Amino acid sequence: MNTGLSCLPVGHCKEAPAGPLSHLHPGAARNPDLVRRRYQALADAPFLNDCQRFPDREAVNELLSFNRAYRQHLGLRQPVELARWWDLRTALQETDHLYQIWDNVRDARCEYYYVTVRRQALKKLREMIGENAYYYGQMPPSVPVWRFREVE
Image (cartoon, rainbow, N blue to C red):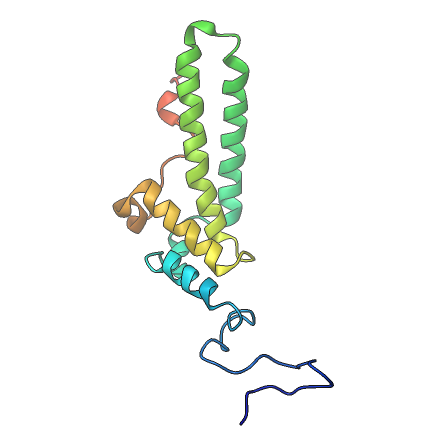
């Protein structure tokens, strides 16, 4: 009987047994529960090629840098402008929410991340912005621009 094992002296095997999961990750044959969990988690996740509808990672990094600079600006204003404390707190929450959205885009566009991580990021992104916006590639701004004042 061929088990797919080429054993060396006493229990030192060169390869895992061939089986229905052997074409997957080398550890998949030893841990089919992991494969099942991952399959269930990604069953309704978008395919990886969906990430092409969103800006590339470098552009997203710039948007996230601006988001963090704006957040820092709001954080410095909050203890000084006590009359606007609640408005600034709300603006901080909106800024953090927009960061999370764009962070998922960055994760999805990061080519050296595992496919599972990238697809999970796309799934979270779709949940956060809604299916219509997701499939049309309509992203919100990286900062709450509705809070900006027009300077004349």
